[in-house]
Length: 284
Image (tube, rainbow, N blue to C red):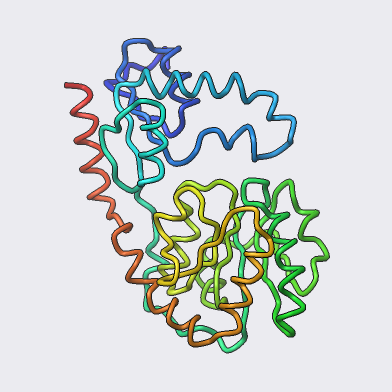
């Protein structure tokens, strides 16, 4: 940063913004907020990271308040920034390369299959997913929960009843994995704008998820999925049993999935234009 001479710097977290502000004071900084910055030290990796929370929170909050402009991506992130006393300069979704997910959707599979895709970390509440599935599985004979992902909480899913765990799947195969599922389940304790939710909706798959963060910007209860309170294994189990035993409900939610995600799809040109306008606004 000291060697380069930028007209402006765009960062994707308050921590990066704080580093830029320290390294190049006087250079305009635009901060993008993709999710709750407090998650990094509280719900990811080792529990010892929580010791960093007080310092990290102060650094992040100072960065949010000192940058030249803040860009948010959803209602959730906008309210998060406003709670820090800052009004976002712009709000628009990030560009996501979703081309492989945007082909014609296929009907729900004959074999009932719930699916989880994501990192196996505390902020995804993988332990809560395992607890919920142990409650739901006896009520769903012959149904297997497919889990895709790896992380520090792999122990929670290893040997889980009526489940199949795959640590990694190539990105180009994820559309096929979604097509083979009846519903995506996402029991997060914290979430920005979950990309896997967008991908599932693009493939016409309903989502059973927790009512947290940016999930509520994407999933409308009873329209394209079901929402439950966070950290409620019994509630999550009931929602899974409900959608997995009612084919009419599952198909109705699936029909609402693809149309509901259209407003969140941005072309590279749209994203570039709006980002350029924000940079020009700051540099002027």
